[in-house]
Amino acid sequence: MNKKDAKIFLDALTELEKEKGISKESLLETVEQALLAAYKKHYGDEENNVKVIINRDTGNVEVFEVKTVVTQEDLYDPAVEIILEDALELKKRAKLGDVMEIPVKCEEFRRNAIQNGKQIVIQKVREAERQNVYDKFKCREDDIINGIIRRIDDRRNIFIEFDGIEAMLPITEQSPADLYRIGDRLKVYVVEVEKTSRFPKILISRKHDGLLRKLFELEVPEIEEGTIELKAVSREAGSRAKVAVYSPNPEVDTVGACIGQRGLRIKNVVNELNGEKIDIVEWKEAKEEFVSAALSPARVTSVELLEDEVTARVIVDNSQLSLAIGKNGQNARLAAKLTGMRVDIKTIEAAAAEAEAMEAEAEAAEAVEAPVDGE
Image (cartoon, rainbow, N blue to C red; front, side, top):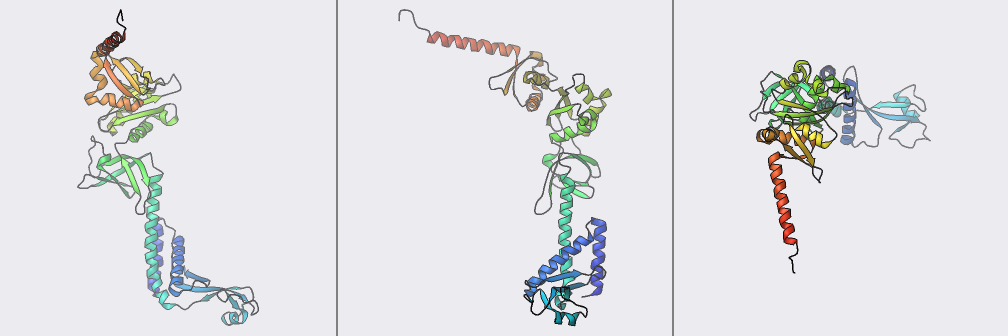
């Protein structure tokens, strides 16, 4: 084996330890185990107790048979035992019970060992890097991370660097309100990190409801402390969102705390989302009250839960109808998602007309079923 190559190999492992944080000793042990398996396979030496050692100072690869010294009478398995007479020829002070490491002559194997070792280390480094990426991002699932936009491909996918690791923000997870420029810093929400046979799959998003949740936690200390609970979020990214908050302490102004003095807290969240409008409503245990609050800024006249208990019939004044429904139905959609209810909105006049029509229909049906006099 070339001594220079062996030394270069050791120096490379030292550099890997500094740059990648991968233990040099663990790499050497991995290479030794792999070389041992390769040796046994190459020489068909499965029975012998063989040991492969890489010298920590020189990098030389050495192969030994490990045998216990026994008497001629006690010799049972020559593959793992050596009689005392033979042991003394190898080591003058050998005695019964000693465990001897006997050098094996395998020059061809040793010559190729460093090259094989390099391939093993490359594979080990790749595995370690994948595990490192997985560990780093897995612990940040359901959290916000801050990175720098490094490139944008032809499909408008955004590639963001986080501590030397690059993750892709696909176009399907981008907010329409965002402008992406190379070099800009960007907060994203880590939706899921999945281990695969190759590189870990990291799903990040600017559209996810979780991004809004975490931004409020960052801006409103009362949420982080648990004084205020963020009960529900519904969002159409880049356009509008609704947030329902609650506190078990009736003296806490939940909505006011989220808005902040002079609207500073809510302004910071809106700025991060590039102007996305946010309605903050007070969560109510009674579904009727919660639906009414969720339709803010519209003023609701009444809310009735239908028999299925998942549909809320909402009555509003005619002047509030367009506000309750919202542009292209957005306000009603967000309220429905926030409350988990189906929301049916009608004006007072439409509800009255519907009630009259149902009453007339019932009277007509009753008249048809009534018996005719004289029959």
